[in-house]
Length: 360
Picture 1 (cartoon, rainbow, N blue to C red):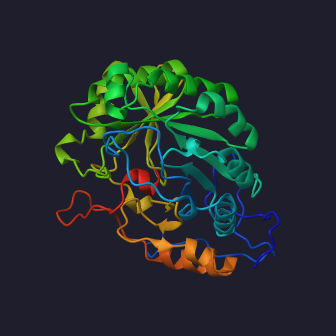
Picture 2 (cartoon, rainbow, N blue to C red):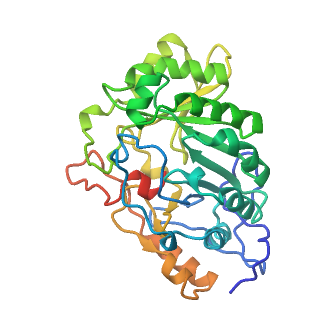
């Protein structure tokens, strides 16, 4: 087993803006190969779900009564999360995003953040949250070493927000956004899942939020990841439609194509602060540039959000596997990553787990 000390000069060939660029290395200084799949894509972005539970019940994610939650002993401990991330950072992971469920309902979240920050100062460390508990957690998370947050918010209308999340909590979420800004967890991103006939009329309103609060609002196309399997293709609103609606009111200028990142991002042509981004997972899939892998709360590795198979990391982790053993398991799984999710193909098969069980 490798020493438990801090990793030195780790990283992936692709640099993270504002962070150091270094080759992936073991603690003894030997260089590892990056995590490359059979199509030549390099995995540098890791999503880690720290818990499957959530304090919201969003209609596109789970039923009103919730889901059968994992038992505590099934969920990775803070020690296990730290070890897996440490091993993967040594193999070239440069960005780690903590997700859920809702990650802020895990009591030891600040400790997990501090542990991951201790792995490598250059690691880009972020959190996706519904924002409900950020009013009291933003400060401690920033102090623990978190870089930034992404806040999920699907409506700026109180009644509609309550309908979509089954919680009357819009005010609390917006308060959390302000707390995150005060704590310096920037740049702040706001994710909005757009569902036709539900909230697709709010695109311009969200663009206004981006301008007023100096945040990046990202519009995400409705995907078939709901537990109740009620997704309908005709409720997908193409990102191009939303982009045109916003551009008609607030002219946009391209910042970047998505590249390995999922969003195509735009600034406002009049120089106003804030940005808008579009994640066109359904109508303009970006699978050919995907650099992500995911670990679920119960320690299963997924190489695609829509994977039909998972690779068990928890069992070897708890059975005495060395870091080299874990690296080999991950490397084999990444090597077999498929070309893309095929949502728009007739042979598409939904994954067995819903979004809250997978981790965003």
